[in-house]
Length: 152
Image 1 (cartoon, rainbow, N blue to C red):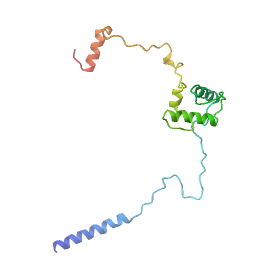
Image 2: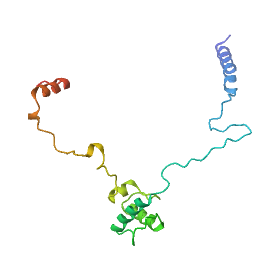
Image 3: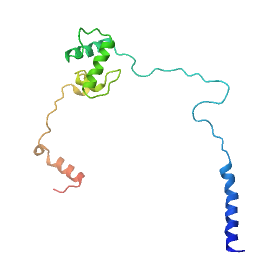
Image 4: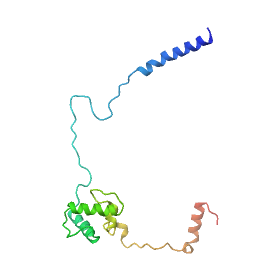
């Protein structure tokens, strides 16, 4: 057998062995959650997230928008078209995206951010600078230096 014939024989054998592997169809179950049966599964639609703003919060937002001259009149406590438009204008003027619901950055800038005064760790806390290094006992500072691998 010549070299060319041997190469052709090997190529033909490889083609015959691998062709069925590429031609077979593997059936896989659907991944979309839909079945191919006759019945349709009924899913109840659950509404998620906050659907409306409480009226006392709307009043706070309206008062802040009135104070910033984005809304005229008195605060009604109702999220109406004029309130939504005022909030969208306020957010647009800040360079933020305008959405149907107020952006958290807008609420914070209006002074309506979260109130942490009632937090457990907020009572009687003082935010002062730590004491000077000279007041740390030598045994404690040596322990820190040793743990950090620093020679003093």
